[in-house]
Length: 196
Image (tube, rainbow, N blue to C red; front, side):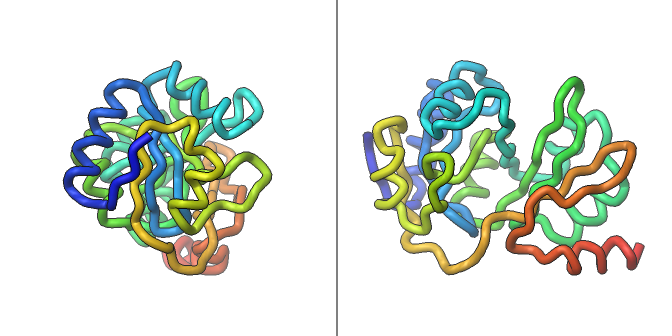
C-alpha cells in the first residue's frame, strides 16, 4: 500500500487504481472515506468485505457534478433538485431511485476529492473509512490502521476538522424521509424546501 499527500501525483495514482478495481482511502470534507469504482461489481464486493458490512447494504456514490446524479437516477424529485442546488457541493447525500435500486448521491466539497472525481469522470462508491460499528476517522493514519490492508492507496489530507458525517435524505414518489442526521441540520433542509 502507498500513502501519498493530497496532490496531483496522488490523483493520477488514484485514477489508475480505480481503473484496476482497487480500493482507496481519501479525505472528504467530513471524514476519511474508502471507495472504489461504482461500476465495478468485484470492487463493490471487496469494499463490502473490507468494511465488514452486511451484504446488500448500499454505499453512497460520490460524483463531480449534480448532472451525473440526475442522469443516473430514474426519479429525480424537484425537492431533491432544490436541496442539491442549495447544499452541493457539501455534506448532503440524496437517496433516489435508480432503476431497480436506490442510489445515495453526493457531490463533496473537498477540493482534492472533487478534482479526483472530475479526473475519474464517473461515480466513486464510498463509505467512511472504518470497520462497520466503529467511529469514522478524522486522520489518514487512523483509517490506514483500520483498513490499510484492503487498499492500494491512501491519500493523506491532514487532520480533518470536527464535524459530523453527511446528512442523508431519501426521495421516492411517495415523499421525503430523513435517513441520517448529520452535518446539515434537518431544519436547514426544511427551510429550503419550504421556501419553494
